[in-house]
Length: 316
Image 1 (tube, one colour):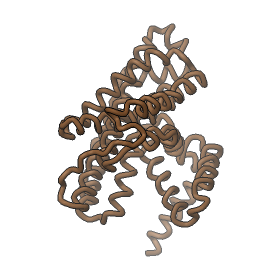
Image 2 (cartoon, rainbow, N blue to C red):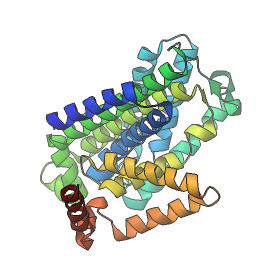
Image 3 (cartoon, rainbow, N blue to C red):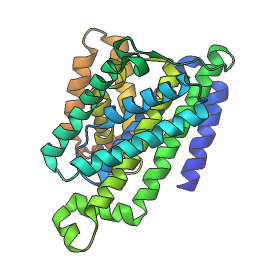
């Protein structure tokens, strides 16, 4: 874990000083996607609860940071405060709906983003309503400085999400969540406080998604309810976790990179039908590789790829 983290940090620093703005924009998006996928993986992967609340947490964090900065609070305080506010909201929400299971919980979590979108639209004096909210542009030395700064900010969010996931994975909370995912009734019988465990991990999920939304709001400098409460922000993290491997530590990062690659490939080559083809590809991945890309071994494709790489190395 430590060696992998050091290698990842070295790669990040190399990108900051060598990559152009286009590559950095893609890397920033990968960082945001990975942070959201890790946030969902905590409640959906470890506890097995199909949460669709990621868009609600993301949008609430974006608007909280926007309002805080509009009131004069600097971004180093606005971002963590927005994340903490969303964590508290997630805690209260979790106590209300985490007694539900299966599709009942999924439906309850799905409507939260719609409720917050309507509240944002109505609360015009604070949020700007449907006209959106403009955030102050940070003085970071032009376009290059902005690009590199927000890449580092999103990368740090992804690293924070990885560290929290690693901590949960290695803790008693992680053991409790796996027991809940296997059989919640049996977990209660052996003395696990399932409600407290679920609420705690839901708050962590909200903290990460909310803080990521706060960074996103400053990155784009303008947000509106339709953008930040978009239901696709709840669906994409689930798809990325499925691609990389649900309930695994590195699955969200792998899934985020693969998903963005598919998005870019289809966006460039089939602009008119890219959303439909992307949906078909994702459906095929979920149907034939339910355990993520690691299931390639089942079909022998992984071993074939390893042999191909070895052959190319020997040939060169």
